[in-house]
Length: 323
Image (cartoon, rainbow, N blue to C red; front, side):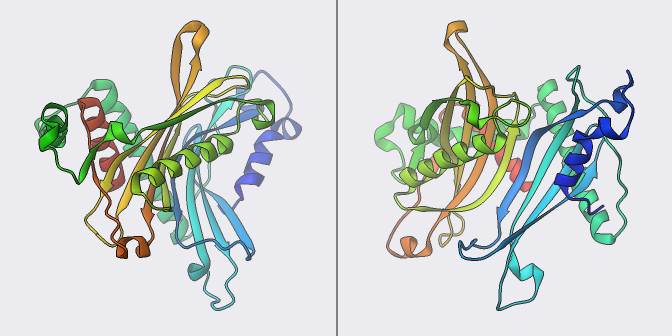
């Protein structure tokens, strides 16, 4: 169960050396593709002058997908407790693809043994069921009176901004007024072992734009809290024209000493010659601001949607955070 994810990846990549080649898809080399990042939580500030230890383990396996949990600890001389030195946790979901056909391929199964391993498995299984449920609801277009009520409540203030701007709440702002964006051409040095653009590169560029968005919105340097979710919907290739668009999706102001700023970044692969633009990735980040900025009178504004599409995105992320 405590098989490091790099060793697991190495095992899969060298599958042909262990098994004779045949037409059987189970003996062919696999491609492991990042499907999503469910959560990256910064539990304590990471210092630049301390050693870091990264430990990974496969905590859940489906037919062709697997979840890997990573823990980053930093050496702390003042404490010997591992829980006190835990700085960051992350959950990654990978899917296996047949190297020839590109279709989903089965992966090795594992069995949890200790109580902690069983708990991690159950938590991962629950996340997997939630993802399946949400995909089913999207396909079926499920709607109900409760969701309609929530949409109308969110849109009420946005309609005032659009129809009667002079009467709008000055402590609020429309989502569309928080937008930032940038563009780039993907270069060969940014590709991974499969020839695609490395997911870590995309995450870094999205984080930088999200940080800038939170910075310009709050009026003070933001403090990173967590990566809420990352979706890898389509691969990005060398030479692609990639556009990142970000906005403050909503704010959480219940705790005045620690307001939360939730930022959405969407990456589009744009092909002007075909007049097409496809979403390749969605990123969701949470930031706050330093306590001294709040003490000096900084006030974070409420963010409201102006369209039904924006309101649905807000509700979807709020519900995802609750789950």
